[in-house]
Length: 560
Image (cartoon, rainbow, N blue to C red; front, side, top):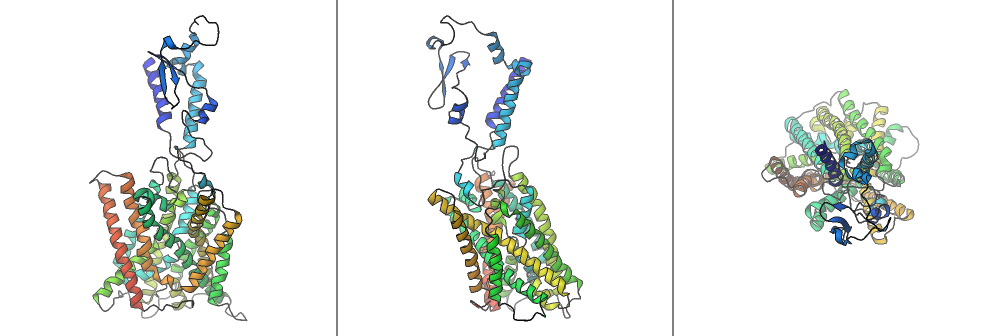
C-alpha cells in the first residue's frame, strides 16, 4: 500500500510540473519558483532531505542542503531540543493523502492542477496583443470559426469557376477542382496545428508563422507581399464587384424609375461608404455577426445563381467544346490560367491564423479544437457551393460563358429570369461583398495599429483608428476607380498570391517547425506538395500574364 501511495503522489506532482501548457491568459502572472507571485503567497521553502537535513533557498532559484550541525536553531519554542511532532511525520507521509486528514491536501492539489490547466501554456506575454484588433478579444468559439471561414472563403471568385471549365472541359475541370479542394483542406489543417506548435508562442498572424519557420527576414519577404495583396487587393476587388452589382440591383428594381441613375463611380462610392461605416467595429470578434450575415448571403447567392441558370432553357447553339487557341503555346497557357482561377477560388488561408488567434487556449481546451471543428463545417458548406456552381454553370452556358463569370452571363443570356429573383441575387452579392470587406481589411487595420503601438507603447486612440480605417477604405476605392479591370487578373493573382499562401508555404512551414523524420511519409508528402506549389505558382503566373496579353485587355484607367 505504501508503494502504491508513493507512486500516485509522484505521478500527481510530475503532472503538475510537466504538463504546464503554452498559453496563459494575459492577466495570469508567470509561474516561477522565485517569482514575485510565489514569494507573495508563500515563504521560502525549507524542507528536509534524508541525508543532509534542511534545504536552504539560494538567490538563483535553487536549493542547497544545510548540514544538521550548521543548521541555525529555531526561534520558536524553548532553546532546548524540541521533540519531533507525530502529526508532522504523519503529514509528511504519503499515506496521509489517502486518509481523512489528507482531504484538504488532495483538494489543494486538485485546485492547483485546475489552475494550471486553466491558465494554459506558459507564454511570453506581450501586452501589445491586448491593444490590437485581431487579438484584443479572445472569446471566440467553433461557431465564430465557421462564420469567419465561410465569409472569408466564399466570394465573388466562386462566380468564375465555370469560366475555368470552359478551358479544361468536364473531366479535367472537375478533377482539378477536387484536387485543389483536398489540397487546400490539408494545408488548412497544417496552419491550425502550427498555431501553437512552438512552446511559449501563439502565432496569430500568417506573417508571424512564416517568420518563425523561415526566419525573420526571409519569412517577411516571402509572406508580406502575398498577404497584403490578398487583403488589400481583395478589398479593392470587392469594391469593384460590390459597386457594380449595386448598380445592377438598382437597374433591376427601378427599370421604370424617373430620373437618371448614378454613374458607376458614384455606385462605387455608395458601396465604399457602407463599408467604411462597418469598418469602425473595433476587433475581429466584434464582426462575428457581420461574418454570419456574409456567410448566409454567400451560400444563398451561389445557390440561387446555379439554380436559376439551370431552371431556364439553355441558350441556343450552346456547345461544350474546350476553348483552344490556334497555337500550342496558347493552349498550354490558357489551361494554366484556368488552373490559376481555381486556385484563386480557394482564398482565405491568409486569415486562418488570425481567426484562431481570437480563441482562448488552455491545456484542456487548446484553440485548435474549436477552430478545426468550425473549419470542417465551413468547408463542407464551401464544397456544397463550389461544385454545383462550377458544374451547373458550365452546363447552363458552355462555351458561351462570359469571362466575367456566371452572374453576368445569367444577366446577359437569360433575360427571361423574373426580375425579383435577379434583384434578390444581386442584393445578396452586395451584402456578402460588404461583409467580406470587413474580414479582409482587418489584417491591414491590425498592421497599422501594431506599428502605432510599437512606436508609442500605448493603445491606438479612437481618432487615429477611425482616421486610418477611413483612409484605407477610400484608398481601396481610389484604386478600384483607377484600375477597374483588376478583377480580370484572377488567374494572375491566383499564381502570385493564392498558390503560395494556400498550397505552398504551409507544407514548408510544417517541415521547418515540426521536423518530421527524413524519408517518412509526412516528409515526402510535404516536400512534394511544397515543390509542386512553387512550380504551379510560377506557371500559373505565366498563364495569367499570357491570358491578359492574348485577350487584348483594355486598360481603361479611371473609366469603370
